Image (cartoon, rainbow, N blue to C red; front, side, top):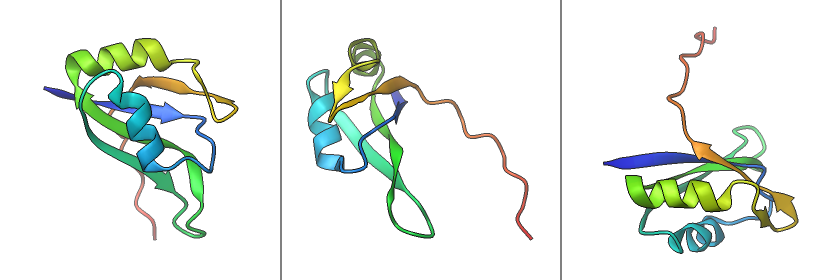
Length: 88
């Protein structure tokens, strides 16, 4: 089983490659997705990393409050997205 990890408080300059390298120390990274603003295309400062369960748990444990690019990362298991009200 794989697990989705929420990574918050990323520096806006962080790239998917840098985040992948950071998490690869704990196991195989299946995917990295950094979220950008739909309007401006600028990074929003958070993203998601997909890893196998054991590797994900090790990464969450090691990287929560880790200093990356001058920012203190928030790292935890991603919760399913709550349904959003439709836009009209």
